[in-house]
Amino acid sequence: MKLDFLDNEKYKNIPMYRMSENPNGDLPFYISRYTLNHSTTQLHRHEYMQINYVYQGKAEHVINNHKFEIIKGDIFVIPPYIPHMIAAPEDCSAQIYEFEFLPQFINQNFDDIQNAGSFFDFAYIEPFLVSENMVKPRLNLIGRLQIEAETILNDVLREYQQKKPGYVLLIKSLLLRLLVMVGREFTTNLEGSETRPIYDRHREAILTAIKYIDEHYAEDLTVEEVAKVSALSFSYFSHLFKCVTLKTFTEYLNGLRISKALQLLKETDKKVLDISYEIGFNSVNHFNRVFKQRIGISPLSYRKIYRGNGVEIRGGENYRQNESN
Image (cartoon, rainbow, N blue to C red; front, top):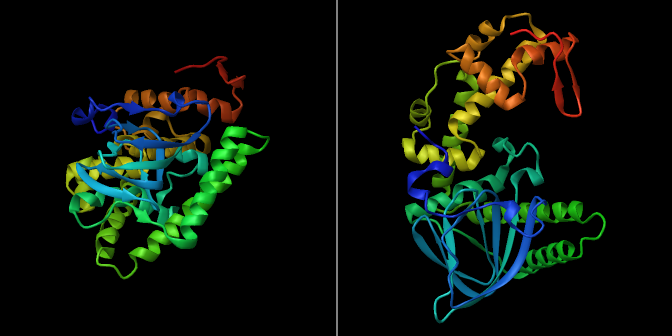
């Protein structure tokens, strides 16, 4: 069964935006400030993360089939693959900052969600809770925090437009500052509120699932089994897991298995066949195919590279000498 949102039947007619489609699409981020006057953005998704901040006026945000009014000072994060849109009815107008970035821009190991802290809660769990009609899908910044957020966003926009030497590094530092500020404010708002148990439940469910996969990756695991462990429905677990880890269940599981295979190929003399079964693949052909898709070469070639048996890498290409399968 397909779990990837790109192939999800109910989303197939919803446009998917990519970072490469933005101006300067070779960059891992994009920022703009636009005005929405009596109009509506198209229901859409995107492969990157998006921070929206209402700089002036008011509008409506639609996510998870729920509509919420947004006003000056509201800030909200849209994780990858989540359909949403912003609308300004006849009596509304708003200026909005739109800051888009790839998760790996702020941390190459961003998929280590257990270290994402309060921003994990706000960006990845919070948007899903609107379906429970118990949580407002945004923070409203006031006073000093509002001024600080607007200063950061103005600085980012100026750096992006001017592109002076070092601007990419400076934008990254400003983004990190904004994320920490938002995460702290979210935690402050959450403490002592009636919604605390909801957040704890969803956070712990995903962390429990990941821990279970890490411990049982060599077994014949199924997404249905892991969903039961996390006490979530199959569909809801699949949806949340994909947005939190940026991977499908199968992608995450195979990633763990291949990482273990790399270690065994370098450190032991075990046969490829034995390694494939040890890490959870029921077919050596399937293992070889997945390994080559992820690493770019066969398991035997990988072993030879690290043992100096005549295979070397030049210019990013594989040059095989005396390779045997």
